[in-house]
Image (cartoon, rainbow, N blue to C red):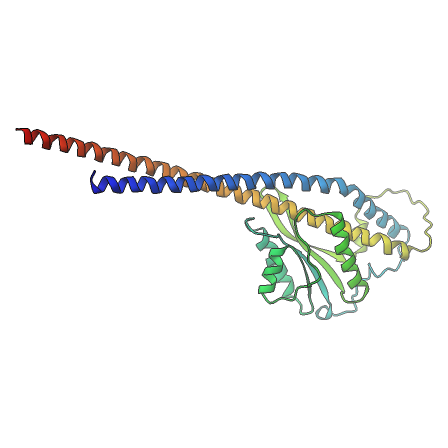
Length: 303
């Protein structure tokens, strides 16, 4: 067997190894796609199950504010007396715990950078290990007590986060609190969003569709104390919704990334199959040519 044939055989073995490697990778990307799809469905169901409760809380606050518009509460105080450059905003940035999710992490981190550039007294709270590592490398001061995973968001975790934020806000350490997360517009479109958690705006509650009937409301012991209980629950609902929305967006982004990787692998696999058949055919042709050449040499010897 000549050197060319041996070279072709080596080529076919190399191509087969590459094809096997790509098929193994496709199994992984397909499995990750299915896992993310299952997590996405679960996240959507969790959000749908809890939305009515928190929506009812917002309606209750809207009704209180409509009937008792003069109610004073630190949670609705806009702190306009503080100059913008002197305000101490806190930003809860929701990232993922890992990559392989396309531009999911990049978009929300880019928005956080833009917000941070607007002032020097910012305080950063990060959900997700990837975001914590990124901001630490950037040299930004991240609240070290605020360490939460982005996986499988729960109401309990949202309440714990709310307790920490309310403690800082009530203690005068924060003047404003925002949450930066990823909102899923549809299966193919996601965008980074910012919501102000505190102080709340009265006009936002005025937009809710409540009944026209002007019922009399009597509150005990006081509206201020009722709001001290209800507002943290409203904030918990917003945080929980943002956590679940971000988690769903992450899974959707990972599904798209894994689908793209699988499609690319199929294209490469198709090209390798064509190359394999071409090399194999060349090897067979070389063998036939060698055999024919040897047969001719034998005939000439016999003559």
